[in-house]
Length: 299
Length: 215
Image (cartoon, rainbow over all chains, first blue to last red):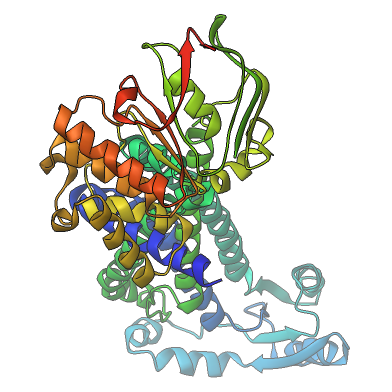
């Protein structure tokens, strides 16, 4: 066990020595890997923030029911009575047209426009929450409410959340595809670099074999090299995503505020950071392993 | 210690390097294999260290048929054999000390004990004062002595040397030959392939000619 640990320690140190022996080459390789990995990592960061945005700003889906403009309060009361008798609704809130008008007048931007109107333009309305918030049940209720007497318009308020969900699903798929493609790219970079390493270390490999080195002893420094290369790329990608987060935080916050939403852009959390570094190291190691299997096989 | 039983080695496209070779080498024996260039001396050593495999017969080292050894078992055979190569195979980007340390690193020797052994091996071949030097800074004789130190540092019971005195002047060659005699005297089995058999008086001779053993 002690010998095994000592072999690993020496192999890791040798890999670090080889990395630092050619600093420019190593730095450029790590940067290339880092930039490639920053794309899916950045995508994941944006997705996580979009998910948080959806979670923070989407309340339970509701249905708004608007009476006709000329419908009187008696008709509204009848609709309210019908709604309250239903067992499939969680909450029914009546919004009298006067209350809506008062609320709109309280908005400084709208006050002048509303006061210029000859009469109250708002109808009586209801806001309804259903017991079953599933999209199909909500759609069914929407259709049913349209049949109520003197109801002019019914609006399902969760539509934008569903659109956002669909966009997020598309984003997840895009990040996955990008991750797979650029992961393969990382393996390819590691493969080529290790191939070059094997060629330049050919004499040492040959001598070590003649002196009794096992395949494991010969391969270990190269595998550590690939792993460190991937890990270095992962760290660069993490830093790039962090810098992009800081850079985008203010303008993006301003943009979503225009839609009456709040968002503070966060960089990758602990889990995503660990995944990024883990995947980067694994891909680097895997590229080295494939390279060694194909270039040391016939030695 | 070593047994060749009707051993043949044929290289494509049908060149016989060794033909039907049979002999024994006892433990603690010193044997010189001589013959003209291309007689098969180097091939014979390569078969013992399983660098190459015979195409016929059996090569036994310590009772083990090395021709039939699995690839994974080869490193453990080679760790029991000290090898001095014709082209020395030194690592020119590592200093004298690091070159001699390599076999012990491969075995996984504890660093402190390994360092003591390296110093002892360098002392034995007279290179104690050059341990920080790179091989390129050494003379031909010193490089050969470095190769010997690396071969014996793990204290193998079998030492193989391929033309260890080639390209050396007479005085240096005699000095290198003396080192092999010293290892033989402390109980190491020594097998040397050389054209200069006279440098090893007292050693048993095996004469090769076109891959065949002369009587």
